[in-house]
Image 1 (cartoon, rainbow, N blue to C red):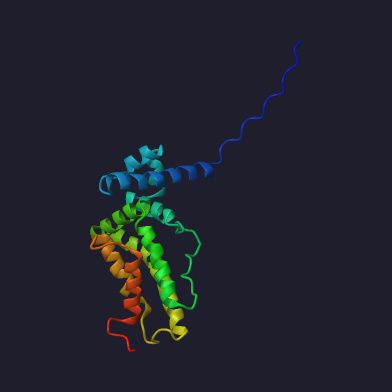
Image 2 (image 1 turned 45 degrees about the vertical axis):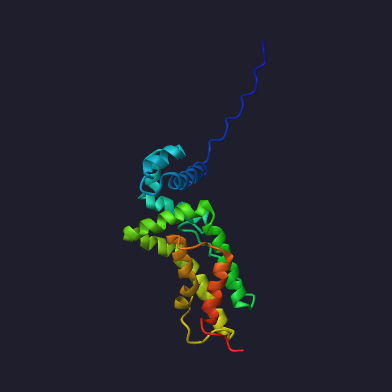
Length: 213
């Protein structure tokens, strides 16, 4: 009589959390890819689901609309924490040289804006936010304002060090260099370069009048 082979242990079932994370990442990738290829108006929940290999009900279980899907996918791509995460965004370095610090972070922003992975989805969200007020508010609250607050913190640090006027409003001051960059990027009014953002910082900090000798 042949001896019986010991039964092989059953393979462990995939954990639901692992399956969910795999599906979530596939949905992120599908949403970002479709927006780049087809544009925001032609991107649909059905298209995202088909590309991600999931049922559309899976997407609707996590997000109420394609805008929410794209918003969270872009936040993840940009390195921001997704909703319900507690991670704080990084601060702008404070080396004691305000102009150098601002130029460095704006140069990094130039690199990001010129990266097709960031450019297409962020441009789609910005454009759609102009006609969809609810999406526009989310775009500002989740994407723009956290970054702008980092500038506010750095400018306040410069005020405390005596490098800026004490009565200056940092939230308004930052628009002197951030808003022109955003306009040029959105409307293609000129090239996005390091030289351009360096000049914006110089104009914002030192003004347009001739410097005293």
